[in-house]
Length: 75
Image (cartoon, rainbow, N blue to C red; front, side, top):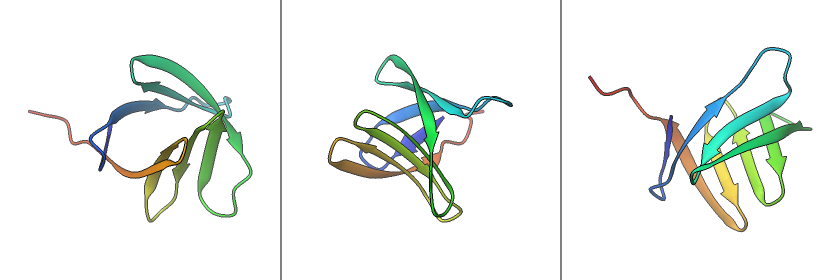
């Protein structure tokens, strides 16, 4: 699970042989196809873009861009 600076959370899953990012975002299941990226990985569909690099993970919805981090599991 990812937690973003704007307070949103989402789950992302990646499967071998599938070039999409599968997200659970705002109560909806989304499959974002992989797009060309100069560095890291970028997945996009419509106005939603997930970008994963060594430096950061960002989620863009429309014109809103927020940085996200992996949420630690609660014990």
